[in-house]
Amino acid sequence: MTGIDAGVFKALSDGNRLTILEMLSGNEICACKILETLDITQPTLSHHMKVLCDSGLVTARKSGQWSYYSLNRDKLEELKSFLDSLRPYIT
Amino acid sequence: MTGIDAGVFKALSDGNRLTILEMLSGNEICACKILETLDITQPTLSHHMKVLCDSGLVTARKSGQWSYYSLNRDKLEELKSFLDSLRPYIT
DNA sequence: GGAACGAATCGATAATCACCTATATGCTGC
DNA sequence: GCAGCATATAGGTGATTATCGATTCGTTCC
Image 1 (cartoon, rainbow over the protein chains, first blue to last red):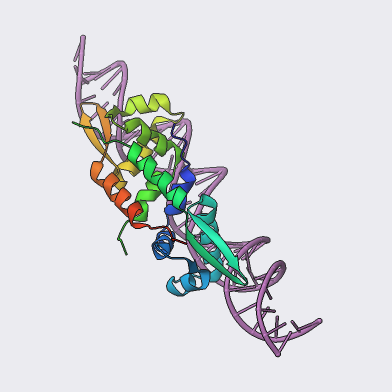
Image 2: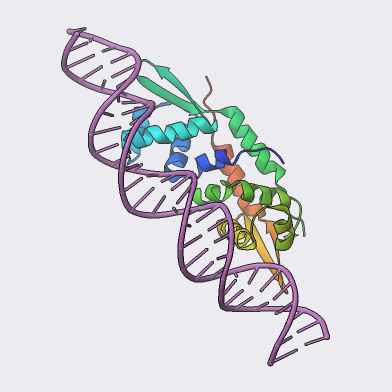
């Protein structure tokens, strides 16, 4: 109906990815910095960043050999709009 | 950090469950009504409703042999608060 | 009690996914 | 070119999950 994609929520449905999003709040962060924080290997982080980017929640910027990530405002707003459209039943 | 549970998003990460939530927007609906709409079997619907209830997004009410479901306002607010806490990076 | 109905549980299966190791790619110096 | 570093991809594995048919449970009505 609303046309929102379950894929966005699938991207959010992992503890490590939620931690990454919290790290990105207000910041643009390099992959290596995220790797220091999480207890996962580099390929696994790369996988998670791909999921987040593919979902549209995160955008990537490459500078030389480094990758910087940040939150995508539009997608966040889209998510909030969807949640706002869900009205609890008034008894 | 925020302490939000990835399980809530896991519950949202399925197309059928998103459709169910949209059906529940503003309404309290009987399971049999949902079953009419979705192209799934009754055991599968029962599974999805359990996932939604366990996540806290949906509450169930039994009346005789019927089960009625509705959205849980508090959990929805919790979700919105989390999304609000995610601030996009200002360039 | 017994039939009928809505809903939950059981058991199984195919698909998805998070994670790893190993390897490849791409960029930056020298 | 070559060494070194950051990141991406390939391939594989164990765990989770969406789905089904069959069955069970609980309620209603005769």
